Image 1 (cartoon, rainbow, N blue to C red):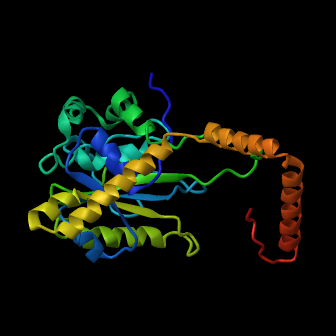
Image 2 (image 1 turned 30 degrees about the horizontal axis):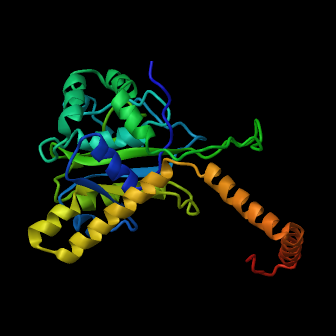
Image 3 (image 1 turned 135 degrees about the horizontal axis):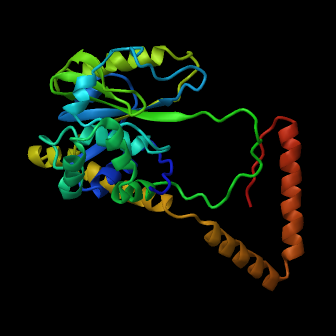
Length: 313
């Protein structure tokens, strides 16, 4: 029986470090800010994209006969890596694996992922999903990138309106076709003939049609591209500026991921304790409290008047 899976962010640094910690090398993720084929093409060689969207909770999501776009390719499930999602919150890593485990000719996935793929590739999709959910390596690596949550929100309304739910899926050109790999669907979804070169234009068309099905006010989408490590390209072409930029980006990702693993409640408490002790030594606790209350009072008055006020001090 597998343990719990936590939610992780749709973030290029998180996904890059996640796939590297699983054993793959010379791969990275880049966040795309526009749906322009040229932006995707600039990242070639491109292995696939991972799309985050609002999961429709008010209409049926799956259909055994035909998807809203494309066609189910049930035979493909035996030829490519496709796993049914069998546990909550695993869709981010499942989408990542749906790309990288189908790109073993181009990507060094490492020993552990290689063994996992070899063990599961002959299994039906639902058994692959169970194997993924029960993999200690994959689950623990996934959970290591979850944000620390030291507090439980007990003020959330009970039995009220449910929160929005989001879901990750993958798109990749595999065996000459563009596939949508979604573990909540009964099979891979084919969107027609596709090569690595035509992938940027074709996947953008599919994504634009998908986004168009939402209300115009819905903007909560995120798209990550899986490509070759851009530092490899920089070294091949002697582009020192790109190499320096990418090395700096990796350092930033390392720092941000370290912050995600820790909560700072204890640290904040010690800082506050130190401030109070200093004020007590100076005999200015009462003065400090009065000043703080005055600032709070002015801020509240300004808020009611629709004004801005500085909360400094």
